[in-house]
Image (tube, rainbow, N blue to C red; front, top):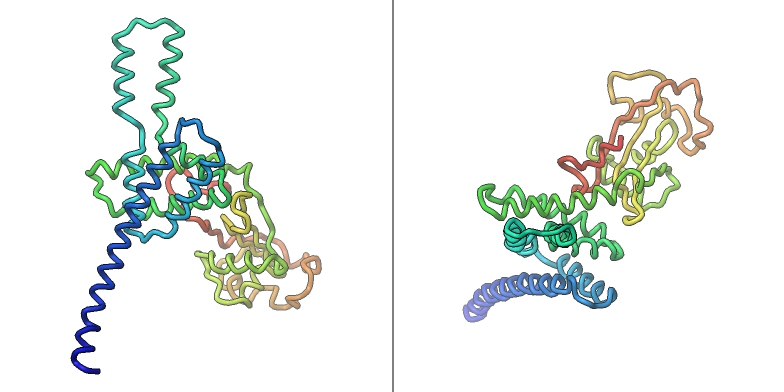
Length: 304
């Protein structure tokens, strides 16, 4: 390579990095513009179809953002579109200095109810109506939870992000209450996509390979998952149970092939298990798969 070509190569790389950085800044600004555009539709007379398309575009764009731009987006959402404290204070100030009858008081209460709800709550409810929208909110809360430790607890944006986190958490608490969850039994005949996710999600006793996975859902073993209709094919909680002859003091025989199932053909149906070998149930592994459904008062673990 000649010295001239080497110089051109050295000059090209910084230019590409600058171009990439410029694009990332533009993407971040574009996401904020999209956010402003969507939230400006609140309380406007516009078709649900138009709102849905705008919200869908915002969600699709957010997924393409780098982590830095996602954090900028979340800070903007949390600080600019939270409760309008100025308008709220103004209503309270006026009420204290007016003599109002019952009818006027009811109207004031209605205004206060509206003002007490953060503007982004409207956005979250519309996202929840989209296909895969609930999953988007679960992932969005994961991003928020990852952002919180990076913030200075003494700054106002820290409180704003915590309030944003609480708003999504409370919404998900309602949507994922136990009455809306489905309990499913997993076997070796379950869809491969589900089996693959189960093998990935076990955080207590990681599954090494397909042989071990087959053992986990085979004879003398049970595997159950909680799912939700808004997130089809996505296990929210994975529970592994071992059927044993006695209460054991070590998990070695459960997590390896040293249990009673090692004496039988793994292809045999569960109905052929020897009842004499089943005297105890050991719940040896439970994993919550979605970080956005964990932490603080809301934890999907409580359903057990």
